[in-house]
Amino acid sequence: MNCRFPTIWSLIDSFKERCRLMSWETCEIEDWVKTEDGKYHSLLWTQTIHPSTFERIAANRKCGIRRGNSYKVVNISYMGWLFQERPPEFLVSRIKENNELTKRTAIFDLSCVYTGKNICQKFNETESVVFNEFEQFLKEEWYIEIQPIDELPTLTTYTSVV
Image (cartoon, rainbow, N blue to C red; front, side, top):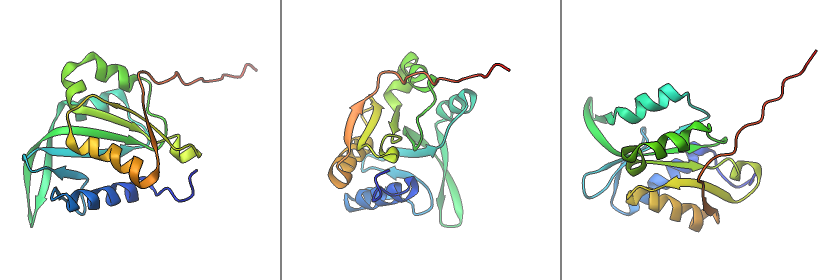
């Protein structure tokens, strides 16, 4: 692992600071960015995700945003999924199968970075200025090479015969 590379939540916090410097609104306790055009961009990070959970989250584009002592429900324009471990194989194919998901969903596979290679594989066909800025952030701050992923290789499982 790149010994200087931060934990995923520290990486997001550092990126949100960069977003604030660009006059985008962020939240200290939630991982979203609101741009000057009023669009919300959500950053989601997880170790892994079950297909039905992904589909429920991707289909429900609403999110509760804390405003003082109350919450406001907003529409999430774009979702960016950050993975510290290699994402499940189904993810890219599910997104590619659905034009709406392709326009609104990005995947950033940081697993190579956490195993010592300065490579982030991404699937990002959105028009999200925040996700484009995230790619620039990885390049400029961490010298990470961004490579597209078309499909994730199949995980190999071994069964022992006794």
